[in-house]
Image 1 (cartoon, protein in one colour):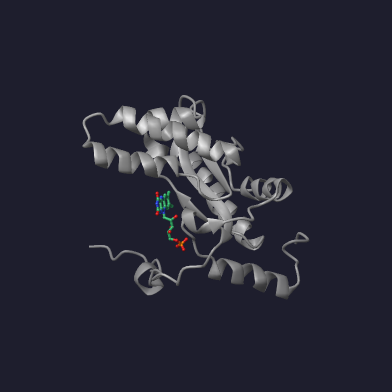
Image 2 (tube, helix red, strand yellow):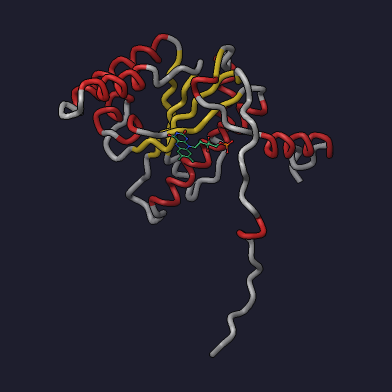
Amino acid sequence: MSEAMNAPLRTREDALALMERRRSVAANGLIEPGPTPDELDRLLTVAARVPDHAILTPWRFIVIAGAARAELGARLAEAYRAGNPQMEDAKREKFAGIMSRLFPAPVAVVVVSRPNRDTMIPPMEQELSAGAVCMNLLHGAHALGFSGIWVTGWAANNPEAMRLIGLGAGEKVAGIVHLGTAREVPPERPRPDLAALVTQWTAPEEA
Ligand SMILES: Cc1cc2nc3c(=O)[nH]c(=O)nc-3n(C[C@H](O)[C@H](O)[C@H](O)COP(=O)(O)O)c2cc1C
């Protein structure tokens, strides 16, 4: 057994307790302090430690922090206006305003899915690996005492917004993960009822 797997029971219980308690916090409820550069390096290292069929590394990161948040927000707002000329002015301005404030948390990490098409590994498996990156990032942040949320939305799916964020051909946004300190952690939300989701396999009765 590896050193980590052999960790004292207390450490393993702590790790599980963190996963049992983690809750997402809306981006506008994430305030300073955010992760330091060293902490962010550590978080991205944890995020990159995911199952990856055939070791393709089918994902990468774009970090949006500091002044870049407002700068990119302004460009996204402009792209929203330009892309929706038919929309009623007030409505267009309302959504453009939302785009301009899209990065309120101290740090946002865009997890970019970039499936390798020259391989037998199906794109879906590679996209799932990118999803695992997002989840590891959230768990890692929580373990360091931060909070976060995994979102997508217009900016993650609109071609011009994706270009402004820095995506290239064949790339998609797996998630925008906002990170910071929770102003307040929201109450628990309903969780899935395992009894309704878990079945035990039994051999089908032959007709
Ligand atoms: C791929 C993906 C995209 C999501 N996009 C959004 C989003 O754009 N806006 C949003 O409010 N929640 C979005 N969510 C949901 C939140 O990440 C989160 O699941 C929700 O706030 C519940 O929080 P929990 O982590 O405490 O269960 C998304 C989730 C996933 C997996």
